Length: 145
Image: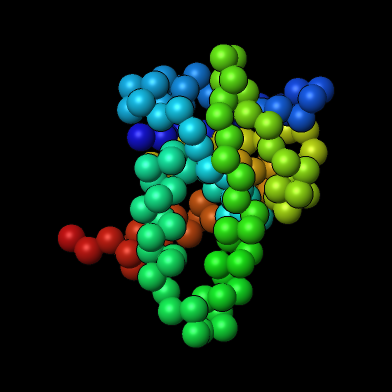
């Protein structure tokens, strides 16, 4: 549903405009509400409401008697915020999420199929440059033919 990478900047009020392609896809799939939370690798994860409910079900199924499960769920869900883009497709990210992802002004919005990742531009560029060389090696390990 969400694909590609888009370079944007936060506006003066700390809002992020969703890429036009993502707004179109959301409209096509009748998505009006998203959930944003702490992601992995120092980025933010953003899910449609439907996808958020699916992910929530998976994480709730992990036994809370396991310390790692409790810790993960606390950090993941306590960071979550519901966002509804305004008419111009802008969303307001809370300061604590921007601090987590070290977002100042320039961001990269990345479509990863069922979720959107929001990265500080420098963090994305570092991740990409460090990961692209191993892309084929990772593919060989993960993808069976």
